[in-house]
Length: 621
Ligand SMILES: *[C@@H]1O[C@H](CO)[C@@H](O)[C@H](O)[C@H]1NC(C)=O
Ligand SMILES: *[C@@H]1O[C@H](CO)[C@@H](O)[C@H](O)[C@H]1NC(C)=O
Ligand SMILES: *[C@@H]1O[C@H](CO)[C@@H](O)[C@H](O)[C@H]1NC(C)=O
Ligand SMILES: *[C@@H]1O[C@H](CO)[C@@H](O)[C@H](O)[C@H]1NC(C)=O
Image (cartoon, rainbow, N blue to C red; front, side):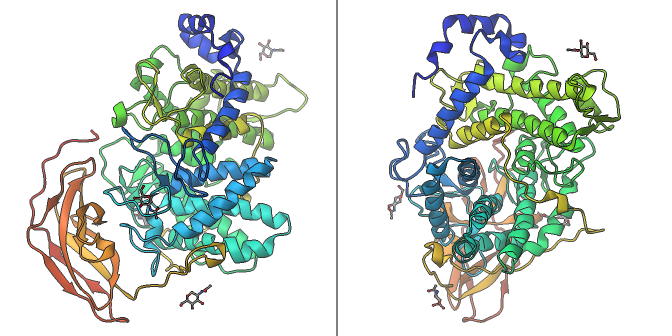
């Protein structure tokens, strides 16, 4: 595998790229025989194998990983990513499921392993809480690769994981139903999906950590996935004749989505004062994960061909033109290296392979949607996006005028496709000769860095390559989705959580617990968070590294509900920490709370923290 296409990457190619940096990137024909099509074909095969290498059991780079667990990266130090994340796993499996449906039959055993592994994982108690009675454990982002809990301070909870897992399993279920396996879906897979949809319906309106695990607020990527999961869950439930608990929240999540649009671009993190512009690769990843080839561009689901998505794309990409030295000679209208957000400093704050390929995928998606609709409506919102690519464009409707291969519509489609290709050419330029995709590449030199062989980088390459070759997953029903509510409400549907025993979950039972609403008045500086550590398992059993995080929705009151063992006397303390490895600041005194016996009433604390706020280390800024 290591030398598959080294033949094409000779010294002459390198010289050609270095001599004409921007034109070489825009026009694959300048690449002296290392043309984009052959790069994509070869790298796609390397990427699919790269994913399988990181998959348990038996993946060559995933020793010790249990069956169906996706290792994020084999990297063990700086950073240590040898864990399994619910988000990365679900996005990776969605790719494998689409490839399987597309004809790669050998992938089914991996998909079946994943089904089993996730049924088990749902029941694992962690610092996010237990599975029963209220599903809190489903918000845990990260586990050991053998499916046991990860003990350590982390950005918890993360609410995109259950939604993405439901989406992946719904895609697989729809395939099985088409192939006469409805009963199997209903008895074995639906119970896993129902737990995740319960979680989404119950907690979509609570803050959580974003996909980069840094910001506790509301995340565009998360909300989009939550809406899609509930909307698709509604349809699946009807088709197998079951009730979907939580799916009734779909309209409310949809109603909430426009809150992310600030008039100029998508502010990816809201309900938080994070000191950032909010321009973030989060938005592109959200749109491509929501892509529906059948969608209308004015669908409220922020499809790639939507005017707001396009306007956001231009503003976001332009921030990276100005941020990274390796982009400095590339004119507007040509693809650049794309990272998470301009203020990023993690591992040096560099471009990411998976977000640069996502930019290409976004554009291929949009072109596919316009071609499928046979028209393109340019409006005041999207005009600036198109002007960079096709300067004479005006605000109007362009029809495909089929039969005319050189219509304005056809020229615009070619221009957007070439723009997409130019992002792929950037990935090509900075992919090392063996085709390995790390997490990032250096903003000044383009050299690969951070976690090696990142599963998500490989999965993102495969989905991009599939779109580029005209492969699209089945519609997820966006044509039937419209904004139904005149006003949006803060709301939640209590979930129903049952171990998915038929899929292999242990039949865990609810310890009889009492809901405790922790409320503590604590002034914090930006970046500092408040936790509770205490004698109960959910509170970390006295280990502050496993403490229970509170949310700042009612700042300066920090609060969250934990389910603690009934009848026990719980001792607890509040702790502060900035989320980048600063030492804990723990209260010196111990508080105590005696819980009523099984069936007793919920308890509420109204505490005031006794420690002073720490000193800002300005991590992350
Ligand atoms: C699971 O993996 C962790 C981390 O390597 C290890 O500490 C633990 O003992 C393992 N547990 C089981 C049941 O294998
Ligand atoms: C909850 O929903 C309401 C209504 O859409 C919205 O105003 C509020 O920002 C949401 N809060 C969170 C944390 O989702
Ligand atoms: C397509 O049309 C453009 C102007 O609209 C023109 O410059 C170009 O030569 C045409 N190409 C072909 C192949 O006809
Ligand atoms: C799981 O345990 C509960 C409580 O003991 C029991 O009611 C239920 O039937 C069990 N489910 C299965 C599938 O064994």
